[in-house]
Structure formats: structure tokens, C-alpha cells
Length: 178
Image (cartoon, rainbow, N blue to C red; front, side):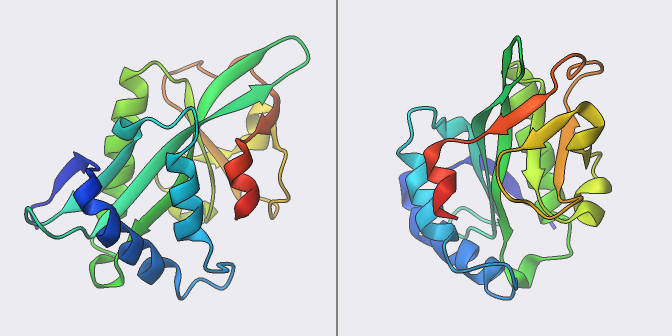
């Protein structure tokens, strides 16, 4: 399976909406708010198109999507910008084929090249744990949102990147919509 991983283009938006809708439809915790959330994220001050990617098996078909958004870890004496992954979606016909893992890997490379120290995600600890994500509490980073225990995960992008960073993870207002 040969896929290309590209920065999203406006012509991809409608297909991304459908991929996200289809990917989250069977998820019990989903309330169908992922697409409006995605649209809201694109309007935020910190939105960076290079942190929104699509996976394509050909030039016209989108089968996967991932987005990173800057967030803040606020400690007693510091603030540190990291990135939050939301959403990561793969069309059901393409799931369990490594598309999500490849998208995540590509996003991590871009984040590392831009100098971000880590990526945070709220998600399945089994899935993300296999990709190097650990419980954020291991770095004394706590989530400002109500998150099920064990589902707030983080991955340092370079060794020691989260040394002395602990604090509360704060999200842009768009995250209040999900």
C-alpha cells in the first residue's frame, strides 16, 4: 500500500469532514462534534496548516487525517508550548493497515523539526502506548479537562524534552466544543 502524506489543501476539506465523521461514528464517546471542532480549530490564532495532514492513496482520495494544535503547559514558574493531537482519523475501510501510525509519525517529524518538545493526546492507551506515548502524569503534567484516568498521554519528541516542565495542560477555547 503506497500512500502520500501531505499538508491539507482547501480542496481536501470536504473529504476530511467525511473521513472524520465515518471514523468517529462507531466511537461510543463521540457525540458527533468532531467536524465542527475541526472547523473551529482552523480559525484559531495558532492554527498552522503544516500541522494538518492527510493520507492519500492517489491524488484525489483522502483516507486519513491528523491535526496538531499548540497548547500550553502552565507550571508555577513557567509556561511551555507543546502540541495536542486532535483529531486523528482514518476511514473505516483503511483502518488496521498502519495509516494512523504513519500519519502520526509524519506529524511527529514536523513537530520535532519546528522545535516542539512533546505531543499530548487524549486517547486509547493501548494504541498510543505502542507508539511511544506514556501517561502524562509520569511528567507531572495534568489535564485541565475531565479525562478518564490513563487516557491523557504524552510523548517527548527528544530525550529530556519534558524535564522540569510539569504543570497543567491548557487548551485553546475551541477544545471546549468537544
